[in-house]
Length: 367
Ligand SMILES: Nc1ncnc2c1ncn2[C@@H]1O[C@H](COP(=O)(O)OP(=O)(O)OP(=O)(O)O)[C@@H](O)[C@H]1O
Ligand SMILES: [Mg+2]
Image 1 (cartoon, rainbow, N blue to C red):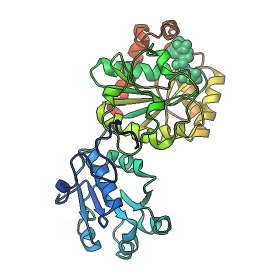
Image 2: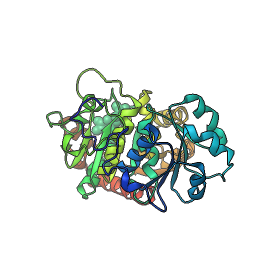
Image 3: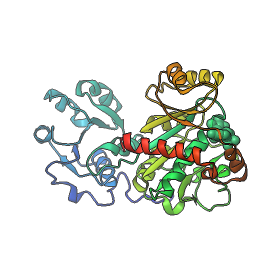
Image 4: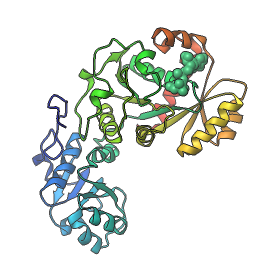
């Protein structure tokens, strides 16, 4: 990244915060890398160090074979791909083929059963794939909230979940991924709050350090919001990089995805550990939600129903997805939103329903 003031902590292509030397002799590493000294090795080690994962580099395929089973994830530099494939090692999960030679990456991905990370463009993905990599890995849940139909209450729910979590001293971040959604700043009355917003963050790449000191904080929630003015074209890599940083510093990250088909929205849904689709209990909203689930391929999404004429059982049936919460209608929400006040000002029933949902997400989550 060009801006030296950006909190990077560890630069990819250099070394991570802990430096690579302490990572070389680990017996059962989270990350095993077969690579010659150089960019690929540096990038993987820096990403591992950034996540406080242990890593071990080996310089030969013989050594790789010895440690093949015991590592949490294995990275094979493209120059070693043919030789590793030649050993016909037992299949295992968590194998990645990384490097800059596109022809090698394409040729050896399938024989190795490996996912491909092209460098340097895919640097942010190193952090992403290591997100669930080992005992020290970051397990903060990332909950994407998307409206099944316009105005269903997705932004309100996303904000409420983040505020409830923060109120319980479980640090939360709320990320606006909807360039045309009106902005979570307005919803939370944060327009005047000092701090960086997407236009300032959209150059993020690779490993990003702790952002908390730089972001606006409202009701204890760190906000990554759009700014007023022309909608920005949020790209995928900055989103992955910012999410990586937020996950390390918070106990919950909530994404207000919005209903656009922008690349970042698709990416947000992909990077989330859970997806909640908010549907209203009306025939038209359920029909729209069904289309959204199909178009977005949200087969594993969970449905949150905003109460209406159509009941939870019918909605679950129509959407072929579980209804994990039913939120009552609450007029105070619209009033609070208009005034930029916290949605926790809603009535007890709405708050209680959201609290139960949050407990469900924490308990059943992979976080
Ligand atoms: N449970 C509820 N009861 C009553 N009003 C609600 C409820 N949830 C949200 N609202 C109100 O409905 C309106 C739309 O809510 P919100 O902006 O959260 O929806 P959205 O799904 O994010 O919409 P968009 O499609 O514009 O992104 C707001 O005025 C909000 O205060
Ligand atoms: Mg919205």
